[in-house]
Length: 449
Image 1: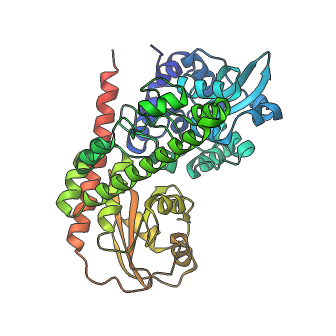
Image 2 (image 1 turned 30 degrees about the vertical axis):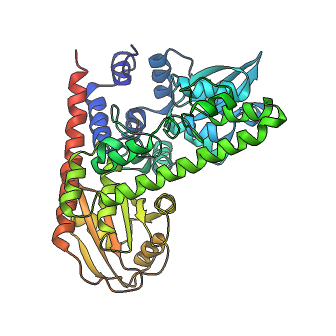
Image 3 (image 1 turned 60 degrees about the vertical axis):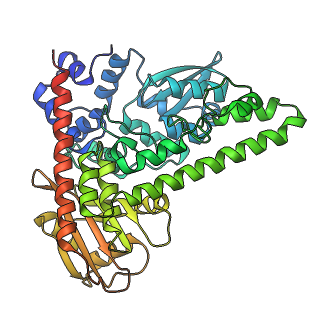
């Protein structure tokens, strides 16, 4: 069993237990990788963290010069999708071996997928997240989460962070949580579970660890694609079947792939409908929050509940001097697209503004949008028409505002709504966040000898 990163740092690299525990507490509250939180607190730098990660996983570490000198051949061999999905930066190729920096050098699924795509043996090296994401952005144009940009800047300036909350934290469930790559956790959404179970027939079940058409095929499709029953259908499997199948089977394979896509789309639509139905009342959202296992569950449940009363809803997470878009529901826009759009939004908290006031005081705001430049920038970050009036409610953890819920009716007045229910839902979210923190602390205690 691999040693824990905190144990390695305290026993071999001169880091105090108090420093590690402080970073663990921040991780428990806001998520993210322990190493990134340690850098954010100014406890370690990327070099020290890289050495500790290499020791933890019993692999070689990556130094900056290796990343700077990544070969064009290696970079061209690895598709953007695989690099982004598994956190991989290819470095060089020699003697049928591809050397690659990885976010998790023990990710066997990622290593297998990389080997299949390149037809090479893989040597995985350990690399800190803050450094790897920087080079993914440089070589593959994959944007870094906003928090990592800030942490990297602070580290370069020699500034210890304050454990701010970032998008990368919110996208990753805490260790041991039940989640998958598209942010859906059936166990946290009781009313959706039955619908999902009905849709997860052998043909339509998703393998959440794989991209594209990660579905379990029925017998006819397994025969067409030349795989064993129960084997996941990955893009690589389909590509191999299309290349090797005789011409008379090509049309049947295309039809099978189209059917897989159709069934996945139907499954996603049903899941979406079930999640919307799960939060019709404040009692519903409280019940769902009671079962929430991740911050994603909490944020998504809240904005779905708010969307029952308002056409446009958005959640912003707080990170030091900025608020980052997290979740959103916009009129006539699919949920995933709304979330993608809002996650490009960043609002400065250095100038006086409505959202700055909510975050600093912990009090809600209800009224018109002032004409200050900072408030206009906030309105622009929402996308769409400038709101006539708006509501912003804070969600706090240990007296610190960790995210804020925005609601408006676009360019119309808000109309009537039940403020008491909205505030009750926010309070339930605060309690759910506290439960997540306690669960994390319990897991830490369970790891003690």
